[in-house]
Length: 366
Image (cartoon, rainbow, N blue to C red; front, side, top):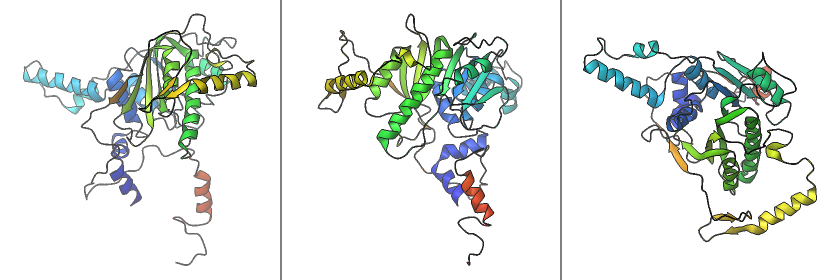
């Protein structure tokens, strides 16, 4: 009942099991790639907050194995069909032909980081570390370039092309608190990305859209040429979740990335300075009649910028918020990769030790 019910409610959860993905979030990255072509000319990637590894699995299958998905796969099928119809090929286009045309990339390096343990993936280096702690930087640099690692250096000898972050806190239901914690997690991911991204690199991260999120977009715009806010089809419309896609990394002149002083923040800021800054921003906030909040940042310019919002993925695809009927003869599949260290693991062990399941224990009468 439980598995079948979830299969009905969540089509992408069901598809992930059928197509061999570790989690439904793999479709979010695939749909973002369809819109922004994230993997073009990309060989070195860092995946932050990677557990259970679905985004790393996408990277492994596309960059290391050379598989194609989504629009790119469809275009290849159409080209092969046209070639067959015109007589250029002898055999019709079949599934086996696609598998034989894999195009693995050379020199691929992928590093995945998370606090939770992850099951290994082919060709991917996995680290169990905290992205908010400065000690993670040398661990990441050593994983990226083990042969040329310099303990005194604060940046990679060979910078990366793409940094991904699908991390989110355990939501509490208090939206303001959840948005704040998520923004701090994004802040940590961004500062770690600034240490390893090459000029012109890309950064993709999950955000929760809430009050004053435009300030976050403006901060990202200072570091990247283009910033979009994207909502994949596989992301539930009822969720505050979205993704910022930043392309064209361009650090300001003289900028030096550091987790100890993120984005150049001074370490000697006093509480009085912080209170004064907060009072300044609060007094300059104005709410218009249409509900939009304006912040006067004291800049001598009339240029305004709004982050473009895009919907990604085929609009005819499954609706993440809809329920679908299942065939009567359908077999319910188990997840491809069960959680390696779920927070409820201890509770399951205690229940099993008590000799029962589904709330029953030894000594209970039916």
